[in-house]
Length: 73
Figure 1 (cartoon, rainbow, N blue to C red):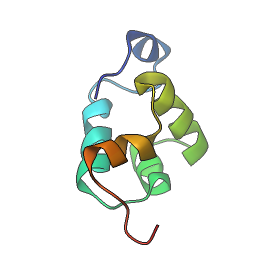
Figure 2 (figure 1 turned 120 degrees about the vertical axis):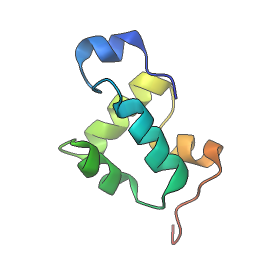
Figure 3 (figure 1 turned 30 degrees about the horizontal axis):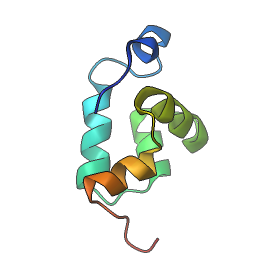
Figure 4 (figure 1 turned 90 degrees about the vertical axis):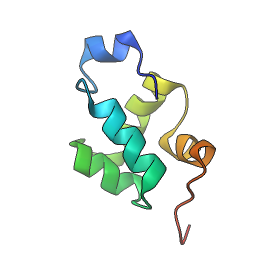
């Protein structure tokens, strides 16, 4: 996952968090709200907005492209 320089500059994601987020989305069935909380965001909505600004896609679309669907969706 590539995080843009602007997002780092705004300090939305801390260095290294991008890889942790990518790993959680690609390898777990945790829902997006759980991942947002785990990473330290106050809300799923803020996390999703920040993620989309950084990557150009929502966390759900990123996960789908990575081939990981959340069970029970």
